[in-house]
Image (cartoon, rainbow, N blue to C red; front, side, top):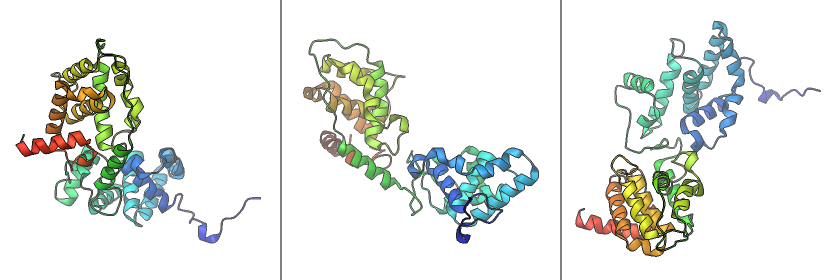
Length: 313
């Protein structure tokens, strides 16, 4: 026998979804995996609305827009959800423009400090029109960072990076002095992801590079049972090769970190390691406490950073 839901749990007949579902949709669409919500559920939970959208009938579209508008009135994340739903499932038109605008005003009021990274060009243009000012951009490239209580903040990501870095337990790769390494191209390419992974943390980098053994598999293979001093020399040359994988803070710091933590302990006394560390730290200076916290640096790197700052390098 079909059970009848209690009156307090019954939705009005014109509400196919709940305000809470729309708010969760907004959180996931804006925060992605940082929202903590399961991605596979988001669209399925809104299927009652999708079914009306798919008919492409004007009266069904009007029902969807009216329901989005009702739920959006309940809070900021509901407004974000309605804006994202319009962008994903409907289109910008006179009947949906207020849903788009209210969503953009909601993220403005949430004080998203790196909002410029998270708006498409069409939303950027509209944001400027309705607010009369530029889109906030504080230099933090990554998930949304708030200076309000509406979601994860930059410090939240920094704290996670610090705790993850402290918990890492790398294992030394076996070395074979005198054995010439093979090609290091794949190892050099891995340094970009490794540098991001260690210094920014899994919450900020993409889920494809959130597992360290996967990130480093090519580098581990290339560095195993070869001369590590020579490997470090080849890796440094490849990372800084013009038009290659370097000239950026992440592969350079990543290469120095790999040399320090994965290769034979004596590698840190080589010119290649000193070159990578100094170049990585030089490139990192504008990024410290903007893109990643200084606390994730190793003791050796932190000491060298103090020396470089002392000399004004």
